[in-house]
Amino acid sequence: GTLRTLSERVSHHRGFFAHFLDIQTGERYKTCEYSTIDTAICMNGVITAAAYFQDAEIKELAQQLLERVDWNFLVFERDGKTLFHMAYNPDQHGDYVDGEPGFISQWDMCAEQRMMYLQAANTVAPETARRLYQGFSRDTGYFEGQPVTILPGGCLFDYQYSEAWMDFGSYLDPDGMDWFENSRRAALAHRSFCIEHSGKYKTYHANSWGLSAGDSPHGYGVYGSMPCLGQPRHDGTVSIYSAVACLPFIPSETRELVEYLYHQQPRTWGKYGFFDAYNLDVSPEWYSTSLYGIDKGCSMIMIENALSGLIWKTYTDSDFIQKSLAILAFNKKTRSVVHEQIPSEERPILAGWSTAVNPGG
Image 1 (cartoon, rainbow, N blue to C red):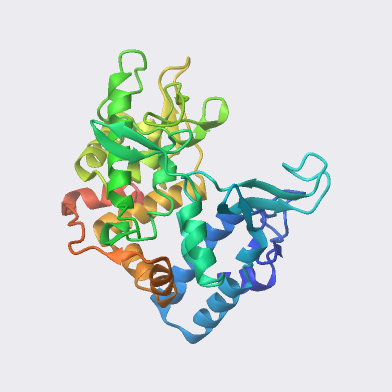
Image 2: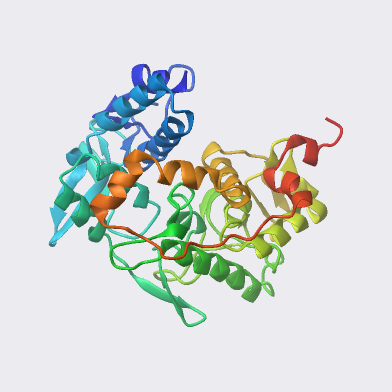
């Protein structure tokens, strides 16, 4: 099974998986780095599987995998802050090390890494766990007069990857920060940004928005919107997966986008639902035909959360995460977010079922 493969066959360094793996062997791909965030995303799945199935063997394997990750290995102090390094590469000529093997960069900004603090809280000293959570910067921008804790490039996925698992709609952090509301404002800001720039980019409009990292006409692209640090990069490429993943935050606007793409842009979807992105501002018009697990995974988890809340509840209510929330001093909201119900006739399209997008089978 998957957990046995992760435990016994997949390359790791102190429990951290390599960023890329050979799909045939599970071995580290060439000399790529051992990655904190990619390991953390995987471990979110491990936590959820163990909590959902309540099977003795699954729980044992999950515990072994979680305990194997040596978060202390990547902790360091800088300018009075306790931070994580982003990655590690032991090879002199490996990726991102420029001839000097060792640690790579650091998580000193607000991005997609909040899941890491929840996972590390179970293994590092409690005081260290709290300092790590307080260590990354909280830069503030504004959307329609409301504050948004912003990210360097304004990528939409950064507001979603931790939020796909953790039910931030039910919790506030120790400083009273509402990460769910922050993601909701960011989603609205992305839509507004695209509407504002629709005169220059024909891909952008009220039903076509969402700027993120992923496929583009030029290969891998990293796009974002205001508010962010500096000026965002964008060229008319709409990241469909990141827009769909906004369903729990702005359901009406997201459903309108899905309906538009499904009915008016049939080249944006196929057997497995929507492709990664599209851009009508290049010649010829460009439609991705790629499906990336990390992108589809986020949008599918968010769809399930909007439909049933299953992933949020399973992950957040697990013993592992409940212990972390207590250590980090998160507080249950007195009133959780009430999510808008999705009409039954729209559910097949949102889920991207092959029977919905390809009635012929």
